[in-house]
Amino acid sequence: VTVLAPDRLADALVALDGDPARTVLAGGTDLMVDVNYGRHRPTDVLSLRRLAELRAWRVEVGPGGDEVVLGAAVSYTTLLGPELSGLLPALGQAARTVGSPQIRNTGTIGGNLATGSPAGDTLPVLVAHGATVELASAHGRRTLPVADLLVGPKVTALAPGELITAVRVPVVPGPGEFLKIGVRNAMVIAVANCALVVDTERRTLRCVLGSVGPVPVRDPEAERWAAARLDWDGGTPPDPAVVDDFGRRLAAASRPIDDHRATADYRRHAVGVMARRALARAWAAGPGRGRDQGRAA
Ligand SMILES: Cc1cc2nc3c(=O)[nH]c(=O)nc-3n(C[C@H](O)[C@H](O)[C@H](O)COP(=O)(O)OP(=O)(O)OC[C@H]3O[C@@H](n4cnc5c(N)ncnc54)[C@H](O)[C@@H]3O)c2cc1C
Image (cartoon, rainbow, N blue to C red; front, side, top):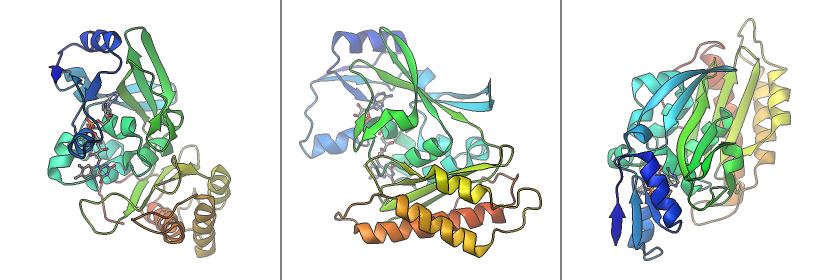
């Protein structure tokens, strides 16, 4: 096996252009599982480990407000740190639920996206934020909404020779929630998960479900329906009937399957419960006040 570990992005892109079948290695927490099970036998590897710019993050002022630009090799441990989880609370909560400390130190947001598993925990949060990915190859750069990057289960719109270099996440003024259900409390792939992001300036919300369809699932009509029934000025808790109906609508929008982790019926029920809880919790925090503390589903 030959391993290239350039320290300049331009060199990485040239190497990939010369051999688009070269295996890209970030944290290796998905890739090595495939190698260990004999599903993948890489011969030429491009390691991203020395690309410092992929591990950095910054805040930029975008046309619609602040955006956090996360290098593709930013780890879960960085995401759940106080600074980033203060800016992106739902993403911090999602990062907290991933694997173990070792996986969180090594696994990256770019790897989660490039794997494109329906159970990937950052995916619903990024779609809820309206995040975009920055892609680069030796021939140029392009940006894509995360929702368009994810094409199907473990299928992405990444072209041969292309790397995810960054994820651009709009900061949303208001609370964010992430909930996850698994067969145990730690080291668990989601049976289902749910991200809710509330924008108190635009008076909108986005609720995105994971692991209940080939790609993250939204129901924009249910989101508009709920937003029209919330007390944006006074902040009084939503009518329980609204919360219940919101959960029912999201459950109906999901397209789960039966597999070894759960039945489709259980998943449908679970996302209804999580959507209800997410809405009630976001409102309990008070519209207009973001939070950075995480919690289990
Ligand atoms: C024990 C264990 C527990 C886990 N728990 C969770 C969990 O709770 N939630 C969850 O969502 N996931 C979980 N995972 C899966 C995994 O940790 C994540 O998907 C992680 O984000 C993958 O990132 P990585 O950097 O390790 O990717 P790698 O394994 O290095 O790469 C994964 C894939 O993405 C490609 N790739 C990586 N970076 C880029 C890039 N910048 N551009 C283009 N392609 C790229 C690689 O070529 C490869 O195909 C778990 C894995 C293990 C082993």
